[in-house]
Amino acid sequence: MNRNTDRLTNGPPMPAEVEAKLAAIVRAALELPSEMDVTGAEQAAIGTWDSLAHVSLMLALESEFGIPIDVADQVRLTSYRAIRDFLAERR
Image (cartoon, rainbow, N blue to C red; front, side, top):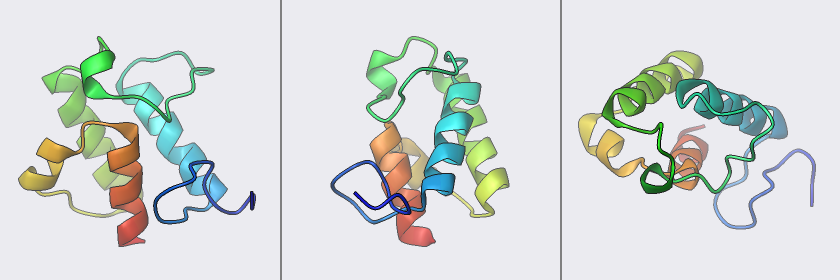
């Protein structure tokens, strides 16, 4: 595994520092413990990932990464993996 790319085996490569930043944003927006591994997080399985938290997460991602996320994309970005792949494709 190359430390400059993601820990996930499938999907576009992502620099480790961007992956770490994404994980921190997800933890903060969803009010998850800082030590929690969020790479497998899915909206249906995280109790704090309600509609308000989802909007907060999308806004934080737009702000941090400087990319717009349209409504159609927001609707499908319901897992860490989907968000990660979305960001990796736009970098």
